[in-house]
Length: 247
Image 1 (cartoon, rainbow, N blue to C red):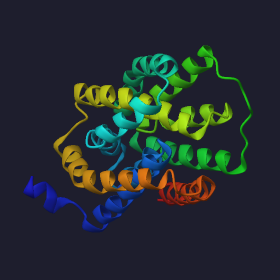
Image 2 (image 1 turned 90 degrees about the vertical axis):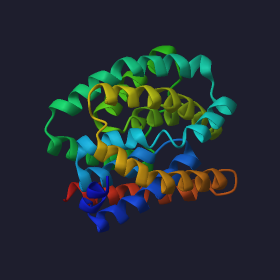
Image 3 (image 1 turned 120 degrees about the horizontal axis):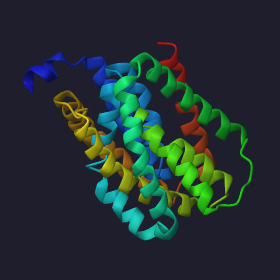
Image 4 (image 1 turned 180 degrees about the horizontal axis):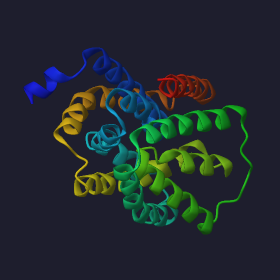
């Protein structure tokens, strides 16, 4: 462990600590978005095969807060089947992670971040009704993407926003979904041998700022302007995506 710590690049580690706090704040406020902030930075610093498991490891220290939100605001009759569907798709994504060129994954993560930020910024979302079939399609896409890149939120976020669900309900359903898929996803990465000593070490270092950020975001949720915070988060996501893409 000491040797591994001495091998870590300190400037990059400082950058990832800041990103972990910001990612936690976004997650605590909105119920999603932590991987969108953190995945590009981790992919740039350590590569996708380390970045994705680290994001999964970081779910462990925030389980209490996520569970508290989920138990209060998640509609399990709708979210439960979505989470179960995504679990079937996560191993498919993990297979992609083990076999695809890391450079392709790095670019893919950046494009996903930029695309989501652009769509949300211009409000280019059609209004649709929420149905069980659409729930399953969104969950399947999210599970596969989450297993391959660590970013499983974008399909669900776009879907929920398109249905015009209330902010508290979106936050609650996403928290319940990520509670289930996060735990099973971590077990999947263990089974695939992707949870290495390096991933555990980096995850342990980032756990404290990530938890602190989530607590801060949870504090802001009932107090801050959602519109202002949304634009700040989108601006940061766009900057992170461009920076990683131009590496």
